[in-house]
Structures are given as C-alpha cells and as structure tokens.
Length: 205
Ligand SMILES: [Zn+2]
Image (tube, rainbow, N blue to C red):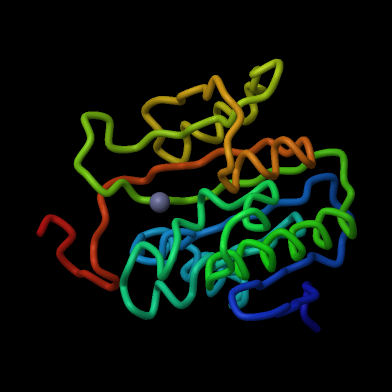
C-alpha cells in the first residue's frame, strides 16, 4: 500500500502527501522560467526516488512546473516574464498565457496552503542564472518587515549549495514574495547556477 496520497491537480502541479501527520507544508517550484532546466531535472529525480521509495517524503509537498509552454519551446517565457506577475499583478496587465498561468498557480497555492495549514510553510522557487555570476549559487530572501530568517532555513539554503543569501529590501511581484507576504511562508528564490539545455550530459559546455 502506498505511503502517500498523490494528487495531480492540473498540468504542472503534483502534490504528494504522506499519510502520517506533519507540521510543515512545502512548495517546490521550478521552470517559472521555462528554459531553466536544471531544477526540473532535480525535481524529476526527487519525485522518482520518492515514488520508488528510495527517498522518504515526510511533509506534504507541492511540486510546481511553472511555465510548461515556455518549457516546450525552451524559452524563458511565451509572452511575459511570469515571475513579475504574482501577488495579483497578473490582473492588471493585458491577458496572455503567463497571466492565466500566474492566476492558476496562485489558486493551486491557496488551495494547498489552506488544506495544509500547518505551523511551518516553506517555499523554494528554484531557478538557474542566465549569465555567469561570481557567486554561482545563491538565494534571495524576499522582503518582509522583519527580514529575519531562522537558522533552520539558513542551514537549508547552505545545504542546497547557496554560497550567499541576499535579503531583498523592497516588496516585489515574484512568486517567492507572493508566498512569503500572503502566507508567511519561509520562501526563497534559489539560483542554482548557469542555464544548461535539458539532459545535457556535459554541463561544462
Ligand atoms: Zn529564473
């Protein structure tokens, strides 16, 4: 018998819920920019290992593929940068694929955090940098009035390989700001390094 309840909500939304109770609800999002493929591969591996029971998932987790259409055409976005459309910003610009997608993501997130209204909420929005950067892997902590992060989260970022954490000083319209400002989640935009084509065996190219 499976240890998990598995729900596929819609294109790009997979929720895996352990049958045992938990105190943390996690969202892991990838491909908010469609050509940032390394995080998609990481999530694919994690999900496979959970489903084949090589890895145990302890907390209800929602995996999101942000922009499937842009993924299919290997572009950052189709019509509009999706990561500028959260916190309801999608309602204020001309409708396009990404405004529709931002609205879908916001409602699945709302539903997930309502059903799993647990004491801790985490959201890691995984990206890869477009340009080479001096610090290859880093995390951005979206603005909050206190801008304090727990040691638990700072350690988590370190274990993800982040060499630095930037604390944003202003409100924004990114996905990680959305979950932090509306749900009090411990949210980060995590930059995992340079973009490589999907399934590239030789990432130094
Ligand atoms: Zn990105």
